[in-house]
Length: 474
Image (cartoon, rainbow, N blue to C red; front, side, top):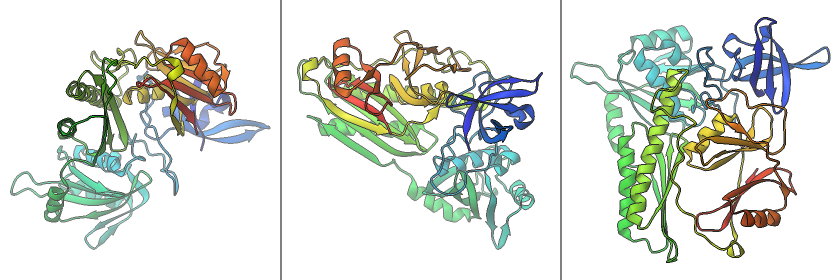
């Protein structure tokens, strides 16, 4: 089912227009649901031919996206859905916590547990598959009426307490432990498939408590060290990860730390520390450089905490659905992070040492900027959803954001959370060697250009070690 963005909606004349990959589709008002009748709303739709002309039909707000007339921050990552590799797509049930549901089963279980704890029956039921089966002893619950009655009678419904969530693969255990001797606990095991609860079993809370204690601990940590990095620095890096994990209320599935000590005496900051945390399938990355490795690790910890605070504020903002950010909340005008210095390697000594190929997604400018900020990058290569053209967003020296398309398009940016400049600079068509020569002569940190062989947009960038890296879309 195609995805697009509502370009405009005219209530007086009863029609609207949806943009996808640079093409506009007319849609009658009767074919677009009420929640999606606002410019900037990201939607799913079908195509039908009317008198020889293709039109959009059955236009529905993308799963879990909210588009209130009182909300002006459209085009964010809220409600973003990634396709699974097997089986049918999840049905379009709107739920505010499903942004990452299709990425990791534990997020589905956490969203369900939150709804149950708050007494939100509609929110909890929205997370079940239409053919979900729940096993309560010898009883098998299959219809929504029996399921809602069971949930309402459970001790966890409306308890306003956090649940403990543990899992592996598609199996997740959700437990509400008893706080007093006379209180009854509640535990279920869920099988998650395609971002929905496919099957559920009521468990004995005494058995679950033993499993929970055994499963506690740090996430798998991969440590990579290059250069003269001693064991004390590695222990320091492990302590940094431990402190961060202990402060989080959600599981960290994986952690990776890379420590690099350059022996070149000409470099003012030869020690580099880089970390990546996998938070329920969502990557969080930070990088720092300093005179000593201890200083680099301290700066890395500070940078990771900033990323986590930004992420927490962003998630809270999506739940509140307010139109205007409060003082101190994240906004597109945030100051750029302090970057490690680049090694001033002469252009004639630079080599292309890294070639990245990845599947770029179709995103709105807001979504691309959010990913760029979350991953601590200076630029982000993506496919613009409205025009279907390879594009980049980048952070300017003034702390604002600019978007550049590979070629001109008559499609505008549409509503964004904050003003984003649309660059009118002509993107050059170059071969790889030509791009290397141009970047070396310009003194810039990266170059966005159209590859002469493939016609796709690629980015050649200057690495911190003074060599080149290349990012190529799949």
